[in-house]
Length: 296
Length: 219
Image 1 (cartoon, rainbow over the protein chains, first blue to last red):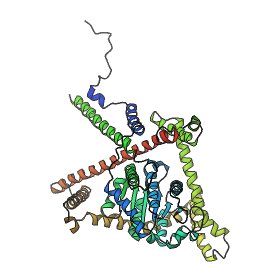
Image 2 (cartoon, chains in turn cyan, orange):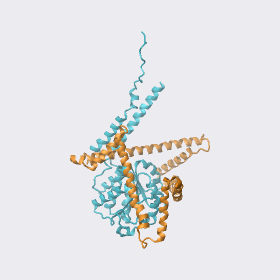
Image 3 (cartoon, rainbow over the protein chains, first blue to last red):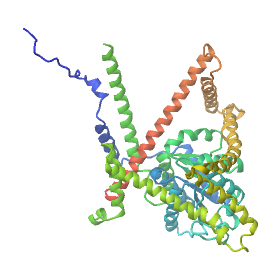
Image 4 (spheres, rainbow over the protein chains, first blue to last red):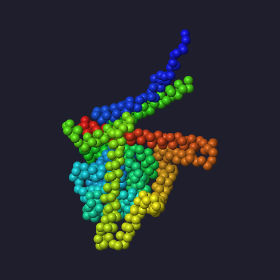
């Protein structure tokens, strides 16, 4: 029988089942991730039950301010792009401080995040009937990161003669006894990059020996761990998990009855991680199947 | 939540922009580009306005030109002329003939920045971290402190040896260098894991916004 006139079959060979695992359409992956995120948000699994020692250290350090009478300073070093990870930390810390009658100072090194700091303060102040200028002060934003932190170490009123609402700091009762960083009990930098906790470490902690912790996005967390070991950071809240842990502790101690946002997100977070681990394993099986067929 | 809230609210604008950004998953398109440019424009505009009202106006222009002599003395005003002059020099970048003048404020910023940054960095990230890598007597009090201290010490020494290029890596040097690679890979893995966690958090945050703040499906 002659094969003349027949065109050769140029189609790529059909991949085996194992090879196909390594070539899953990206839209299928999007769908899987969307499903594992949406379903547990609607049907909660309540997986959040434990708190890491690092988060507990931040909670204890802030809680102990009650005995010293010194204020808590929160630096809003993020913008709306990191809101899901850092905003729950910010508002939980303010709620914790207000519930324990600890005075709070909020400022920002990121211009686009300053409004979030004011929003969190106003929301929590309404919940705990706290008074602006007496129980808390919103300093606002000032350009010049290093110069700002160094200036705070010498004289807060020289860097921020007025608060974020345009009132002279000298006229605010709360600021009567607070002159410089040495008068601050504890600093937390809620940091999404640069400027952030690293700048506070360089100038506030290293030069003025300020006690501080970091609330960072998960991306930054791995870089922050070495500073925990040396004691330069008192504690660390890493990403949305850190936010969930803080929310959980504030709620468990009865300091807040507000609805949590980060703690319920631990259900989709856990399932999404599980899905990604499975996808990595499946992808690797496909990769090795491909390599094996190539050798054969 | 009623249909009017879903269709006629700021949450609707946020939801629409979220969908515009998500549309990039399909392919690059004008809706994505619109949302992206809108975000960049608003961020920049907000930053400029806030910097002007929080820093440039109250710290420079108001005391220099609009404050009475009783409040801001002549000496202080002369001092304020220096940052004004430096600031204006940056704009010479737009005039090629005198563009060299921009180097003056840049040189000042670099000199001042390095002067305060180098000692602080050496103290914070070099000396303190070296101190943290050493084995101290307190580590002998608990077995797990000693174990983690040893792991940390071996990790630091081996990772540094991996980047030691002044001698051919063979024998003990090769062994230490390859151990260093393992520590580096663990470090990269931890960073990547945290990055995945971060990106998932942002996705969850968006779905929380859509399902709770916009549609009111979850509470």
